[in-house]
Image (cartoon, rainbow over all chains, first blue to last red; front, side, top):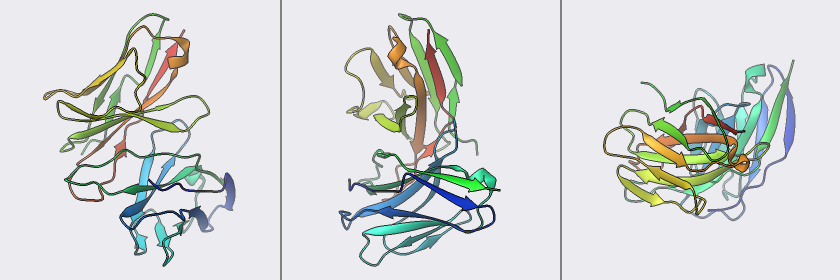
Length: 114
Length: 115
């Protein structure tokens, strides 16, 4: 799986959009970009994933560059409860109906400030 | 639809005892993954199981650790003769395994403390 690079930490004002970048310059054509977050002491929470098109769900938006070498997770209106470590993970999609394990890096500690 | 259920949430064991951690995947999920998170560190993959089969155990320590996912019942992560270095949060995740881009859902973890 391709390696990802994320900033160690970021701050964001409550109510503003939080934009979390991720570099994955060695991504392969069959690798997806996944985002998870881990709020302190809790299990990781799935946020969103995508292959090459931008994606949006009730939690966030995922913007993937045209060359797929980087992406940005956008939390449109950050709240204090969004304070967490955010992990960008790149991995090959499952084959034959199976899913592979996730490789977690260090992630970005997002702190939402009141 | 209940999420991934892990129990116990907290487990204290004395050195040399056995620890058994249980994970019930989400309904309809037949793929289970165990991860370990040592204090102040990231999550590390341990083992990937499907019903009655270990698919990938490349992250499992060679000794004292074992995992199973029987046909009936939860997945079990077993640690024999625990040592202080086994103190960590152990997370289980499950996925349906269907389709090419299935996401995994995590439980709240079991925090093992070895005293």
